Image (cartoon, rainbow, N blue to C red; front, side):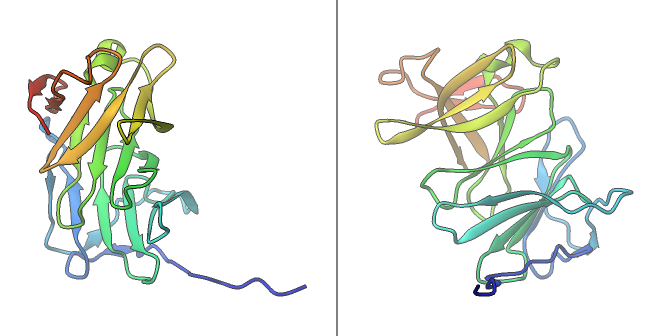
Length: 210
C-alpha cells in the first residue's frame, strides 16, 4: 500500500502579525465596524487547547478558511500554496459557519453565534468583511439561532442563499460590495422587477440597485 502524501500543512500562529498580512478586527461598539490593528497581538485565545473545528475550501481549491477551536472568534484565510496566512478576520462572536460561494472563488459568507440573522461577506483581502442582516427572517430575531446555506438552485445564473432557524427563514440573492451587504428576497419581492435592498447593520433596507 502506497504511503499517504502530505499535500499541505498549516499551523495557526499564536500571535497575529498585521505587518505580514491584512488583519481585520470587528469592534465591540453597536455599529459593528471593522478596523485594522497595527500592532501584533494574541488571537483572542480560549482557556483550553483545542484543535481545528472548521475548514472551508473555495470552488477552485485556491483558498482555505479555517477556525481553530482555541481561538473561536478568529478566521484564518490561506492560499493553498502558502503556509503564511493570507488574511485574518477577528469577529465579536464565535465563528459558526464558513460558506464559500458555489462558483465565485473570492466570495465567502461567514455566520457567527449571533441571535440576529446577520451575515458577513468577505470578497477582497484588501477590504473588511461587509455586514448585514436579512430583514424578512428578522421577525423572530433575538430568540432564535440562525444558520445560512448556499442552495444548489440558480435563478438567472445566480445562486440562492437561505437564512433559516426553526421558526423563520428567507431565500434570495446575497452580495457584498464596498462595505455593504445586499440581499434580494425571492419570497418577499418580485425579484425580476424590484430593486434589491441595501441592508444597514440594524436590518433596515435602503433601496439601491446593483
